[in-house]
Image (cartoon, rainbow, N blue to C red; front, top):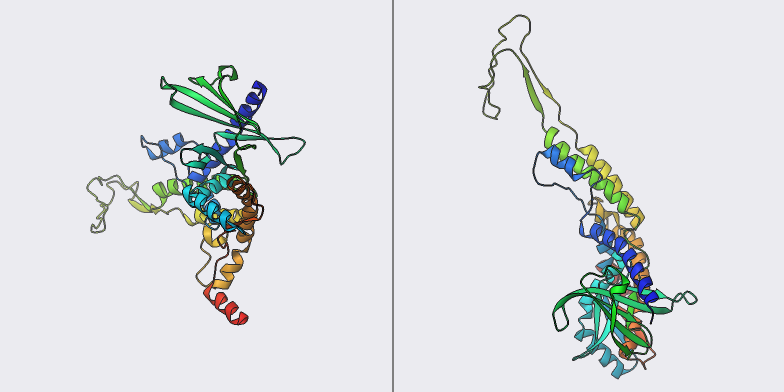
Length: 379
């Protein structure tokens, strides 16, 4: 439609990529240390870089994702149910949905794009690093257009390196390319423009209830700093160090459990022989501080504390059930947000069906005792 749309969407995607990459790195454990890696390498005297990471970001995200499981759709129409079930299985949505939910929870957005293939209508999960959507300012919930930007190493008849870009509008789909690296929007040339066969933008935007990692990154940095300091301290002063002050030769003394030191008296009267030791450093202070930070992570992210730290073996199943209540509420909020996206997917598959509901696995932890009591009460 317009190079202005192209430029605006590309600028937005480049800006979003910075945040997405940071969140993804923290989730995957590629986290920077507060002090430089070079300092660690100098302390350890090694040629390789050393990092110590205690990744609680993955626990915060996975504790929610493990309870959010999309199971398909349900409709009052038998024909629609059969069509939706077939689409669910053909596109392996049980697995794909988990990845889309992970994108949304970690990066703040998950994307799925429809495409017509030789096997019919297919739904493909797309990396949020490559997709962005632009909404109408007058109607914030209405998608104005969407863009997908990606690199192909062997594009076209000549199998050349190119950057591909698609613009999705409600009425038309435009396809652009640029040879080599796309350093400016002037490099892109339109090579295909076709009417949109779906009559709406074939991009589904999955939004989370909130970003899981937004408020815990600084706490994760602090935990990694303490963990690294503890490992450095343990390397150099976790064991007691002994010393001898004497003028005599002690080169024959060997330090091992089977040896007995026989230290001769000094050969002068000015200084007597002295033997002593330096006390070991207490590593518990690091562990205590890390536990307090982990407790803060649990409170801020609404993750049950027994996921991050030792909660004690005396807690009952009912107590653990209560501790998980904030997590259950958070998961339900995510499900409410994701439901909008999956209902839109269903409308693509069966556009004439109105009464469609999504199916989700149970979020709560089931306790056999409570289930039994409930069944007895019902009887």
